[in-house]
Structure formats: C-alpha cells, structure tokens
Image 1 (cartoon, each protein chain N blue to C red):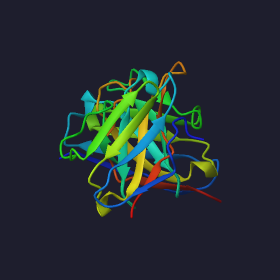
Image 2 (cartoon, chains in turn brown, cyan):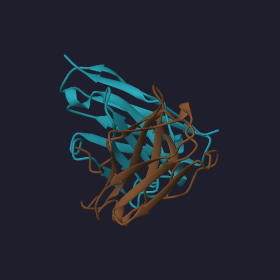
Image 3 (tube, rainbow over the protein chains, first blue to last red):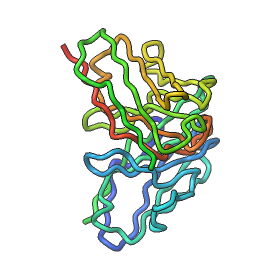
Image 4 (cartoon, rainbow over the protein chains, first blue to last red):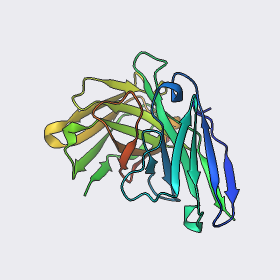
Length: 112
Length: 123
C-alpha cells in the first residue's frame, strides 16, 4: 500500500489530453514539493516535473504539474504513442522524526 | 554528462549481506543529497534510503531500517548501501538517484538515475 494514491491506469487517444492525480496528506504533499517521473518499459525513471510545477531542461511543455492542498496532478497534452509509460509521483513525508521519501503506486498510461 | 553507475548486485542467500556501490561523475558530487530507490519485479518504485551532501542527515524506509546502512565518500564521488540480513522481499532492481538539492527533506525530486543493479535474495 503506497503512501501516495494514484489511479492504476489512464488512457486517451493520440493528440488528446490526460491528467494523472496523486493524493496524499498534510505530512507529505501538503507540506512538501512534489515531483513526477516517467518510466518507459525496461528503463530507469526520468524526472518530468520537480518542485510541483517546474520542468527540467529538455522536457517539453506538453508536460505540466500542479499542486493543491494534499493533491497533485500531472497533465500531458498532445498525447503521442511514445508517451505510453508508467508515471509516478513522489515527495517527502515528514510524519516521522527522520522523514522519508515516498512514491505513488504508479499509473500506466495507454495511448489508444 | 551526469553518470551514475551502480554495481555490487547479485544472487545472495537469505540472511546474508551485500554492499552496493554507485560511482558518480559529471557533477559536483558533494553538492547534492543522494538516494537509493528500488523496484521489485513488476512493481512500483520504493524509496529505500537517502543521505545529505555531508552525511549529516540520513533516512531509511521502515522496511530496511536496522538492516541497511547508507554512506558516501565525497572524495571518491561514491555512494554505498550496505545491506545485511537480506530477505526475499528485498529482491529488486536498486537505483542510485541524485537529489536536486543538497539536503533531502522537502521533496523536490531526483533528477538523475543510474540504470540499476539487480539484487536477488533466494536460497
């Protein structure tokens, strides 16, 4: 059971827009920055969004992030078949004295 | 070019130990926190442990606390994970990941990942 909750799967047609939600609590998303990762089959995760809504160099602006309260959302516009992957949200959880990193369970995106 | 290269994985019997290493290059290693993240076969990502730039702040997942020890050698640009009392449920691909900040604890993100080293715990 992951600390952060994501839908197991989402799907949309090429060219369309999709959003992936990530729900947490005040000890994690509510008081810390959120990041998003794309994992293509057989490869290491890749950072898409950091600090809630910032894109690393080289990440197209089709990818966007937002946060409100204890939830975060990844948006992908102009879907391409190459976007088919698993997507994970991540943050820090401060509920314990030492803190810990946490991830969502992952969302599989299918581009129909 | 930033590179993170993990090594040290392999097949090990339950209860035994293994030490993972991560060789970093292409960035100023002692400016950033570093982490280990694992992924069991067919499963999602699980944060294992993290260490601040100067080793002053260290954290562990509950699942490995007391059994795993993270460390770093800034002079050698290397990150380590000593894994003791290994269990079948520790079987996973272990990734080394670079934090975007010097100290973890506010989230942010992991901007570079290695390709991982596979640890299989089985008799």
